[in-house]
Image 1: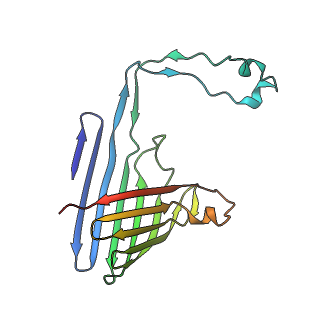
Image 2: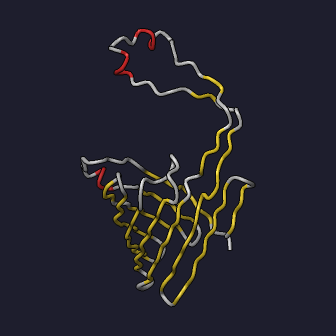
Image 3: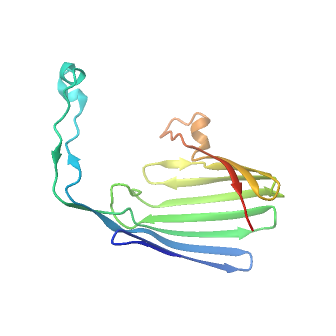
Length: 186
């Protein structure tokens, strides 16, 4: 697939099937954004640097914003590689490797690696769980649950890190995703 937003972003992806294997390779968010004096800029203020005198801040004094010049910012370009092995119709295993291609502010600070498994109980109940490791984020355990009602209506629930909900202290990351309904039209 090739998607291009003129002069801004390009996504390129490839996939291949071989027996029970599926492989994928993609390059996403390649490009840049050019801002043309349509935004305001100010510097961050650390409240502790105000010497405990918050009265000006509380009384409505805010930093002055100024119009800034043109600015070009690189998109958070990434290379993604993945592989999936279908063990049988009920079980599959997969892995992903994501590498940032630049130092954009919104990009990952380093490589992201994950391993996961899926248990599929005849499309009625599908459970996914895995392990992921990323620089500065540490170990995470993403998980998801899909419930099917018939062949074309599904409900999803997932999280980025089950360990946070189990009392993980280091680098907690709350993330919950919920998809209500998907209808497959064939």
